[in-house]
Image 1: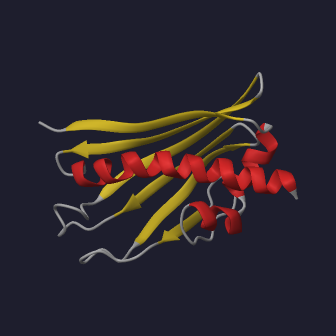
Image 2: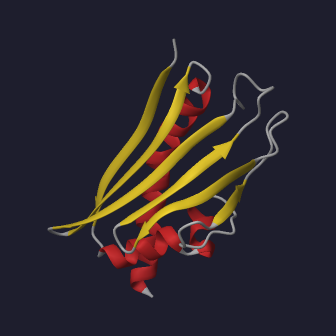
Length: 149
């Protein structure tokens, strides 16, 4: 029996949604906190993230923008891995959603990475769970740098 799991990270950042949106949706900035990419915030846009290959996985994450409502909602598919890499590189077919909500003192940023099927995606889930927390910290730092300029 397989189970589906999600990674959810929430944090209030002391910046307006528009500033955080720019950090999430500008390809150059996105590359600084996640991976090199050819992203554009347009519904239907197919794009890739590229990272170091692992085993027989080529290191490419195939994505497609599913929803884009500036500056409050961004959702894209996230597909990668390999069928012949049952442990660390198992095939992952998931969805990433960013929600920005204005609150007193800034913006609540909620990231949900959904679609991890256990047991096959257990390694990816474990690795990405702590990774997404660090990513949120990097987004806060880069948005602050943008704010200062």
